[in-house]
Image 1: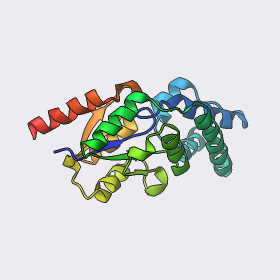
Image 2: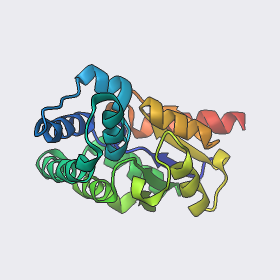
Image 3: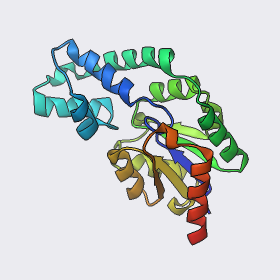
Image 4: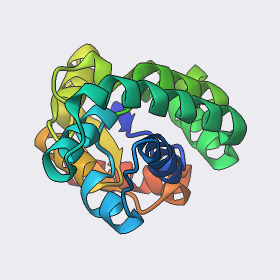
Length: 208
């Protein structure tokens, strides 16, 4: 029986992929660097900012001394975008509200920093439905490592087979599958609604 639903945030509950791409590029532009949209989706999507900066140091010669500055600048830019663009989405509120009333435990597990996760959940009016949230600052290894999902499952005092994880990008899907939980892959935030999640849970429970 599925007792908990764990959500990635960007691309699942919040349509923020473009925000992360644009704010990182705006920060990098200060030093004349740029990541193409194709490269971002193929290589960097879903990774923490610090991981992206480490990769840019290896492949593009970005000085590691700039990491702290760029990370801080990117987070500041992201927060401004959240305040400006992040709004409640009815079918997400409805889905989480129904799942909560049915007794499901709900958790967000994101590769973003805690302040970004909290701000997005607050602005989208979803925070009140969550048992808790985890950020990349709550684990030693970010996705694609499964630590964030294993940590959430342990904190819920559940077994992986009692949990359904919703993920959208390759790094997150890899982490979710490695946790041993059931995984629902979504194409966009529009795929995340009560009907689809309910059907997925029913299909899983019909087999097990």
